[in-house]
View 1 (tube, rainbow, N blue to C red):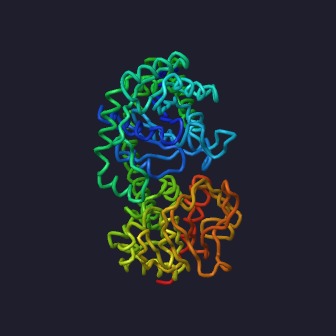
View 2 (spheres, rainbow, N blue to C red; view 1 turned 120 degrees about the vertical axis):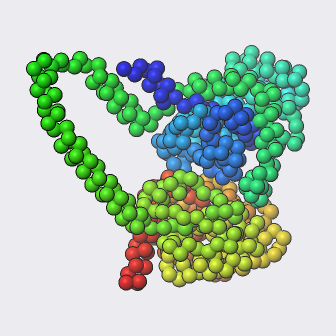
Length: 531
């Protein structure tokens, strides 16, 4: 029988959340250094990011070699977050979750909604608090104590102090924090300006993909190893309680039933019964073997036939994916596949056009302004978009993809490039951020993704503005709700849905099924035309 300890060990998932006292405290540097240091120890590290973010997960993936996942209990739900975490953490040695902003900062100043603290609670994960201790000594203890007392049930299990002036400075703040807060200070980082992660300028992801930040990741790992007790961090991570989803609980119950059956005492047949059983076995053994082989062959053929029919029935969604278009939640892509779509990827900046077998197009966010010339000169891509629009193919575009559907795009240097010309508007880049924050997007009218009134949750983050020629007749896609109230946003012509809002399909999985169903209908209409 599997003991309770063995059951817990089976579903134990060592994990830590690296949280900060605020933005700029150093949690990204600590996270990446820790991931790199543990990876170099030979551990399989799985990265996660709290909140709606594409840049930090790209860092994590570059360091660990494994796709990082977003965890957001406002855009999705606590149950969705737990399932996402459990599935991605399964089989890994340790999971490192990077927080967002300060530990308690989120969507609502009066609660933990959308905060790192909420994710820590939902996933029952120990928190390592990163504190910037420049120009302070015992005051550092007051900061940590305040964070502990705001949510006493939250497991703040350790502290890493950042930007210490010297080892002597470190010892002062360490003693003060440990005396007043009764938790260990597990390490420290020196005050080194060149250790800072670059600002999130709009060429950062391509730089990561080119490996230009690898030396920075290595310096962060070296600094963590020098000043941090990695063994203690691993011990804290290992104390995280087993995290079970409903499926895991069911698995344990099934295992318990199996163990109970094995414990029950078997009946021992008599000598005569054994002789009769042996004779019957010898008579039927070959027949059973022949029948089994026949059944297996038939099942194999049926599976092959089903797989072939299923593959043929799966509509194809063409996803633009390269340095210009790379802001996709893995969940969105997976939900589309689970809904029955087959995804195929292409690179507009590499000169590729829309795949010939596409039944839909997905243009994600990213940095089209950084590659505007390459996009503008890719006639296959732009003409393919126009042709798809004329054929009423379902076309979904977010943020950067939305910009490419416009008539033109002017970059920060004032150079204007022609784009697809599907959306009757002009895009202007600016140095000032145009929008940032959570959005609840309600459909203004029916589309292939949503029925009128249906909602999706997501976020906005962009440095461009979209100016329409005729502001009185814009066929808006969404009415979005954010901290500043309601506004109309995006473009919807029924088969073309575009906007600045990055949506998370996990907030309304039915939207993925609706999209795929419209792709299937489009495919059938194409086949009828051929016939």
